[in-house]
Length: 69
Image 1 (cartoon, one colour):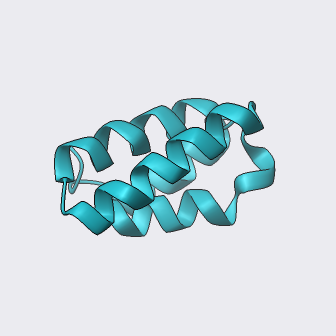
Image 2 (tube, rainbow, N blue to C red):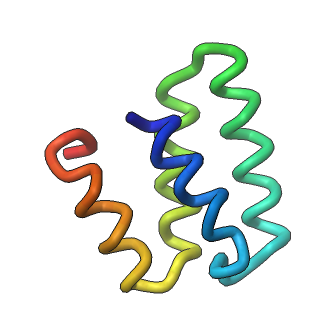
Image 3 (cartoon, one colour):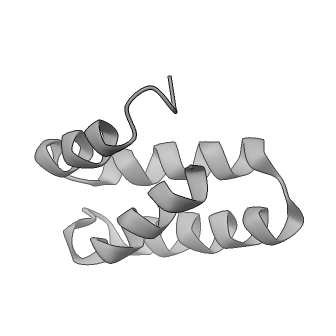
C-alpha cells in the first residue's frame, strides 16, 4: 500500500511544492523499498504528502483510506 502511495505521489511530482525536498524523499523512499524498510518508507511518504496541495493529499488519502490509519 505504501509503495502504491509512493507511485501515486511520483505521478504528481509536478505538484510537489519543493522539488529539492521531493527528490530527496523520493530517493530515500526508493532505497527504503529496496531495503525492505517499511518504517522509513512510511516516513518518506508522509513527508512527500506534506509537500502536495491539500486537494491532492485528500485525493491520494481517499484512495488509500483505512490502509494508512
